[in-house]
Length: 114
Length: 107
Image (spheres, each protein chain N blue to C red):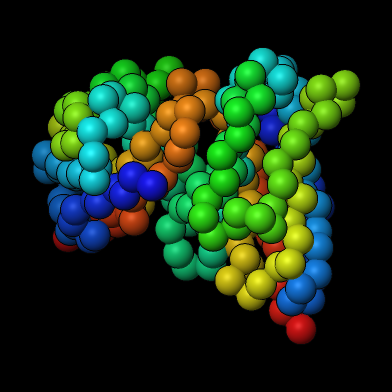
């Protein structure tokens, strides 16, 4: 059974940093397209970052230069390092696979507030 | 980046209705399009990928069509479990963009 389990969310002050993680089981993070998608309270879905199996990375303009996607193949885990956080980064952060595989985690809430 | 525009934003329909949601891309995306269903407090669920391929386990009343810049999601006969918000998503090696969503409500 495939599972994606996010962790690391919480409350952080504006300008602060946080790292969220996505632990995968039954599915290889290193051999597949993996992405981070966020959803602000009451809003729609926003693609944040994508990492392809070959290592190609894409970031949304709204997070470029502040967020870094990475993976730990030995732990089969995807990470999102979030720096210089702003109030508008407050959202539930989901990790997800390629749509053809169709797996999503349950999400982790990041709240940026003083 | 490629922009995805969904219409309508809200749709009121009755059980048994045929429902169609449209998604337009700002430039050609071939068939690199997925459709998702999301219910409150839950993660999105993939319904369709590659514009028209039904994800495993998804009921056959859902179908997708289109290529290039115009795409549609059709529910042939709306069921009680289908009241939710639907999103289109363009995905490929260089970008990933969602439409703004269509909420399907009970009429």
